[in-house]
Image (cartoon, rainbow, N blue to C red):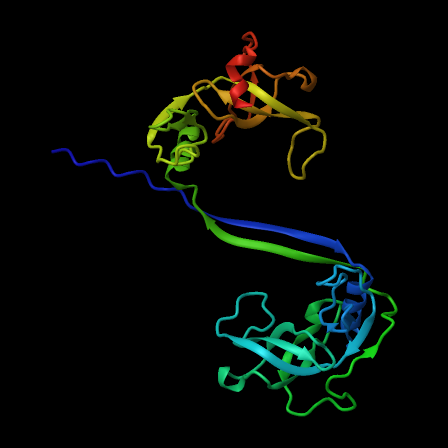
Length: 324
């Protein structure tokens, strides 16, 4: 008896999505962050008289614009907390700490930050804390390094009081750059693993639905219409038909393609779903719906570099209208 062949290994790869997000600050956020740089904590008063810290620019109840700033204390009360025994990179503290919501003296809402405490037994709702300022401050939320326990109230600051502030500072912070990063392991799954492996052999493989018999390329593992698994592999193409397209006039960073160029939806012969690809080998203003194209592979490429005209007559509109 011949042993059954083992299924191919499903692909997996580490993936990092990272980009800097640049935003400008309105007058309220500008005053708040600049104030942190100057060791001043500002809130904003809502239409019902509450002082919100951190401040917002629009009332959360009425949606009215709010600009009236108030200075609150740098001491406050923990309203709730959670212990973080395993800090992650770039969190406020490298050692175990508590995430706390702190209602600063004079504020009616709480601010989220880290509390430096020796252990969870040292943390409790209602405990008094104070701001620990960062040694170097630039006008960011990280100017508050963390909170720390403080049994005594700050001198000269009465609990529950907030004082008006004009929000004016020298050299105000007007914009910030926030780094966004996501690290994870991506797996395309069984169906797309087979699709990717076939592309490396210069073949395009889809999967047919056993119910409606549509062939999906790239395969999804299940029919989106019937909801049943698709396991019957079908080789399609290599030629196909342009169903629709767009002309790209803005050059993407790190992409060595001169603009303008054409990106199109292409229905490969035998497929019931159009995939997308770049069109080359023809002036951009001559690309059209119904154009017959074929893939062009580069040496060592694992997918088509682009598609070019086959020289065949254009496909009749009725042959691809359901794939637009």
